Image (cartoon, rainbow, N blue to C red; front, top):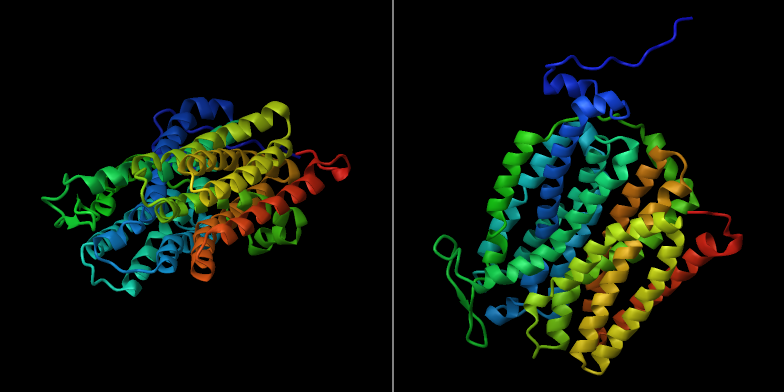
Amino acid sequence: MTKSTPAGLPEDGASRKEILAKWQPENQEFWERFGKKIAKENLYVSTGALTLAFCVWTLWATVASRLNSVGFAFADSELFTLAALPGLIGATGRLFYTYMPAIVGGKNWTFLTTAILIVPLIGLGRAVEDPTTSYGTFCLLVSLLGIAGANFSSSMSNIGFFFPKSQKGTALGINAGVGNLGVSIVYLVAPLAIGTGLLAPLFGDPQKTAMGSVIYLQNACYVWIIPIIIALFAIWKWMDNLPIPRQSPQVMFSIFGKKHTWLMTWIYTCGFGAFIGYSVAFGLLASKEFPEVQFTYAAFLGPFLGAGVRPFGGWLSDKIDSGSIVTFFALIGMFVASILVLIGVQNHSFLMFFVMFLVLFFMTGFVTGSSFRMIPYIFNDQFQASLVTGFTAAIGAYGAFLVPKIFGWSYASFGAVAPAFYILSGFTFLTIIITWYFYVRKGAGMHC
């Protein structure tokens, strides 16, 4: 019997297409000679495109709180619904975006999903200039923004196949961590764009607020168009369609019969769902409870902390060899911080509200990083682990829809935000119990 041999290395001077056809990242010689450079190019461009996608996905949160000040007359529940819609669309899109790079190619899919973002940006830029724009029109355009949120799943799925197993964690950590920083970047850039007339000669007229100041609300949308065009060029130039194996539906659906799929989805939703949901609702909530405080340029700090700490959640979990312990204590921190945020609101203490919200964001970053580290240790089969990771990422993103909707419902039904925090804090408390019972207590029988 002849022993099969692995596919040979590409010849020196082989074209990029020939190298991709023989992709062997676990082969050290292939990796050093051919793979490393191509993989890093794809990672850097993908990360930049994903960062822009997060900027677009959450930019409406920076606009919604200013609409009524320039002539619109939307109710609180309507504003929170508009802020929530991108989360609904983005989370739903994640459920199938994961599999698209294998079907149409990672480069092709990244180019398409990045290019299409220009459509809602132009539409919303025009809509905010006209106070007669209907609520239904805003719902449609804001929903189109949501497709940006789905890009996370396809980006993570695509990049993972470029790197050897020993470097996947770092590569995916860079892609996810830097990508998530888009939430913080939009909070920093959008107010600067809105407050200046830098783009005014090209894009529309200024609006006057009820306080008499001049702003350019449309610039929050238009400012991202040129970076997206640059990203499209980089995608076309430096990304590749790597042959990715397709999996049968039977294999993909096998994860749904395992209890740990649902438990980890619950835990990750509590962490990332809170991070993205609070990021979307942060500006609206602050302007509602503290209208006398102008903290526009500090709003980026919360999402910045949550995204920036995420890689350290995974690092600390590796350091102490337990993602469940880090997750457990970070969840306790989330619970305490959410209670103190509510106390800040009830005492009308902006300092307490803001500082405790920063702590809350900080803790969500640890939960997202450490809970993702738990999954490969729970699911020994790496393909199943990747499927569970993709599924939890999709469901967790629904926090961008549910959290603002809960705040909107609370104001509409009770005229106060306290019931919303009772619900969200209660969800966190249940997650603490689940994490302790299934993964932390001595009899849990699960080291992750």
